[in-house]
Image 1: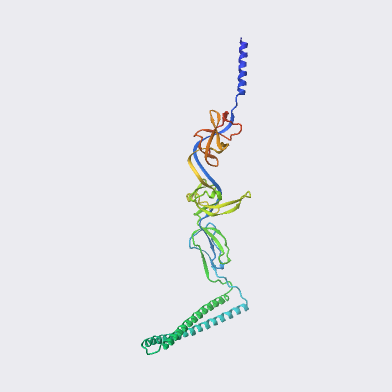
Image 2: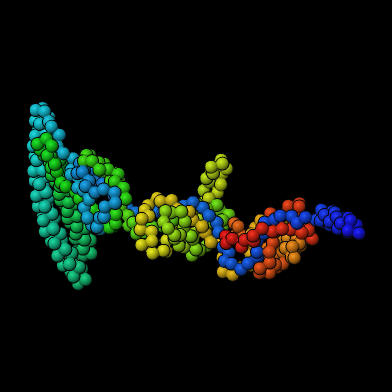
Length: 412
């Protein structure tokens, strides 16, 4: 009897083992729980900082510039003279050139004397013409009265009027001759000054012109430091307000269309401990073509954003520094979401596998906004439900699954 009991027990164990081996084994899967969390839809691009207002200080005149004592990073006040420019210095002349220059000075001085003599002559002609003019004015007034009373004929009044007009023309001509002679004298005196400057000792400087900064700030870049000759309009240094920075980002034209002034921008990877806040100020109306690193031509648009975080948080930033800019296209505070790799297509719809009582159940969902890591779920899921991540052909509706430790949906 005992032997039969052992046989029966052994048989039951064998039957149980066969049954367990034939039972469907749970498929090990990764899972995550649907949950309410902030969701953010962003467009990320690399950008760089830029001074909002910068001034390129140029030489106002040609001449010899004195050495600049300013260095990049120095503070400069508005109206300060950063350097001085002297008139071109005199060159060394040989004996022949010196004598030629002296002769030219004497000739020009004589020309000035002749011009002054002509001025006196023309001024005398003006005085004579004005006396004649006054005479004919009195004659015309007298003949007008006598013509009205019939004492003189009208022809005499016509002759008087003609003489008056002639006298007026003579006065105008004489005055123009005086003005022309005076202008000629001024020009000749200027030539005398130029000719005399050639006789200055070699190396002697002339008039000094200061180079003034129109707006205060910090020196960004010194373009010309050493003393030497500079041409009018040559750039010397750049000055700007380092506390007024903006960020310039080149967005794809398709992303720029969705960007509006005032949009929030998050600046990261700029070197600081925490992200910075900025706001879009300008979307430039014109685009341009740029070749990407892969050799693809892209249409880009420059977008300018102002940093709104406290200056104490980003005071180490300067002109031309690199930042990562994330443009917030949409964001929500309590959004039902799941990881993006939980969704898959079933025909024209989107679906997920929901784990219920250890079994994978196929369920259709309606997705909303899509972030980089998570997707908003409008319909089909509830907060706290567990879904399968990376579902493959081993997962089927009603099939048992063995999920690992579920993770929460990551904010994106």
